[in-house]
Length: 218
Image 1: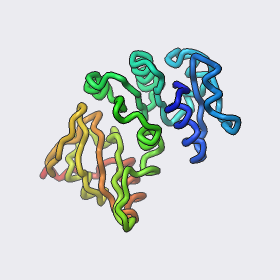
Image 2: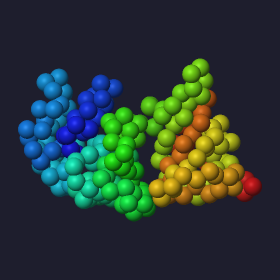
Image 3: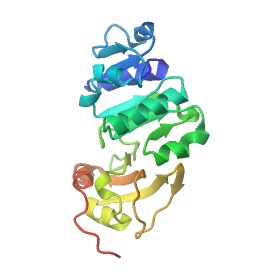
Image 4: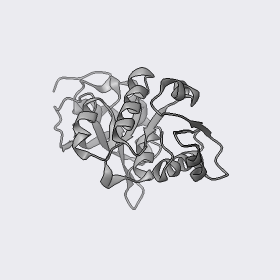
């Protein structure tokens, strides 16, 4: 939702990576920013209107980004996408960083003013594992930023690390970073920063999707 500078760049970047994209904007003229080569759907209308979202294919969507110029519109649209249509991968652009904690409690990833770039949204909206935040110069270690899968909520950090062959470098929780211990319990809405060996990445994401086999209680 939103076809300004960030929204149009994000849409083209996703399409360049072979994702199917639909863009919603209240102003039909805004779609000119997408350029003549854009093949996705362009839907004129209010981005948090359920009928407009359905016309844009929300029921088939894997992710939703609210990148209009208004905080209220973005958070309403993000909540509708998550709570009405069940989209788990939802990102909202905000102007007021002070609201970030409230949005995080709702399980919605936010990107505040100082980080307004299409790359920030791209790394948060593409399928988990497709775009790491960082690779070391040798290409051996990658750092991935993901929303905790629901199946891991309530599990211990140590269980995730051992089973996924990864390390949680830190957790973003309610707008603040925290360094977890082996016994820290993963909570709903946590954003995990995982350090993974490149050759183990597919295995790690399979484990994350499958859920914990056990928690030994240590």
